Image: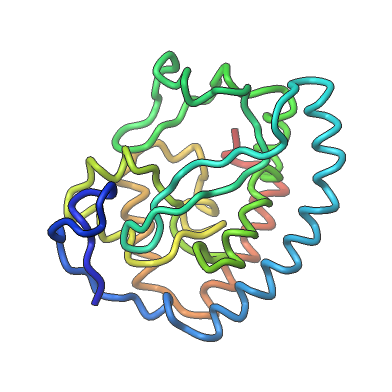
Length: 222
């Protein structure tokens, strides 16, 4: 059993609730697939990093990478990595952008903070490739839920906390069933809980293969 803290700022606080450990979290075959996939993914990440860096240098000077604190399994925080798709200091301007989603997520189809190169990276999901490092470290899995930000998790009810019973993933139910076009948080939570019910190694592999089709079609990406 693992306790979920009331506040993510202090893991020693009284627990909010007691969650079961989902079998996917410690499954050796799933972890083996994660390691193999992460190693291949990091090789690809290295190959695309140089052209992306050159494109950003000429269009939006700044860091190649973007990092943000996210919440993973049972609310444990970690630093998630991406190729930068927004202008520098974009987080400070978030309050100026209208949230088009319902619930504890943030989505805007025409977010002005996204750079021209960033739009391409997002449509092709290339911005996600540095997260293979998070997968290799064991903070994420190839398949799971999308990791929320701490300010989102602070608003969770006990029902919403259930989505954190598995490791966050590069792909999952949300990515293959609409991606950013799904703007209702409760719909996302339902997908996450459905994944936990359906989970198996075979189902993970099915979602991975379906992800390739979604990426190629660019459906729901912005």
